[in-house]
Amino acid sequence: MGEVTETFDELAARVAAGGVVVLSGAGLSTESGIPDYRGPSGVARRHTPMTYQTFTADAVARRRYWARSHLGWRTIARAAPNDGHRAVAGLQAAGLVDGIVTQNVDGLHTAAGAAGVVELHGRLDEVVCLDCGNRTSREELDRRLREANPGFDAAAAAVNPDGDVELDDAQVAGFRVVDCTFCGTGVLKPDVVFFGETVPAQRVSRCFAMVGAARALLVLGSSLTVMSGRRFVLRAAKLGIPVLIANQGPTRGDGYATLRVDAPLGRLLPALADAVGAPWRGQDGAGVAPVGVAPAAL
Image (cartoon, rainbow, N blue to C red; front, side, top):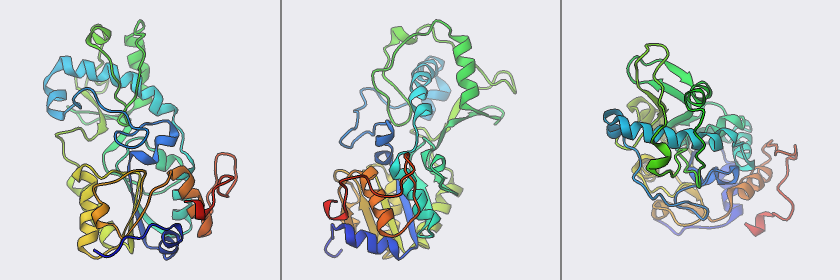
């Protein structure tokens, strides 16, 4: 691996050449109010993540999960795309980004206007019945859970990127879980990939194909700690495709990076879009980098 460069101008030049595939992680959504696990604004898990095996086999654990997720969903549902998401959509609209793969389950890339996003781990705003396969919206499930638990008044101290929160057993003891309305008895699960569950093979193959056809792989806001996302960095490096990493803090992919920039993505990406002439629009309707942010400062 050659010398790694860390300049904004080099990043802009590589993105301006086009053929970029984006791989995004939780760090892209922190400025939308959704903390990540390991970055500067991250929250450390104090409990073991829910596994697919436990969720399907243990009714008590399933009730605990839904009580916590019922609260966490309110934060996810209120979250809006930040300028980083909008800038990525602008880069795609300008024809410079050919594909977007996200490890996030918040749906914010699509909400920002990006098209054809591959959501590697699914979406929290969709619910699937594990018995009959029927799919419903999370809004509908939220309404049903509120009706089934009118006295549930627990408050969440912190929300994880997957919508989970911290609650003690006493707070969830009386929580009522609802079943599928289509088949009547089926177990409902958010349509996301749990620990112990594998990403659908067809979805993984699509991502590998996108990476293989890319001119560059741009990693945004991911520590690349888990193999689910890191495998695409490994594939790009194996194929000799440049790996560009923009993240606050080190990542497990740094050894494969051609270029690395450490900066807040809500500032970096709008400046990048402006530098390459991509038509992004911020919340205020502006299409320029925030005041005080210049490429030289990144």
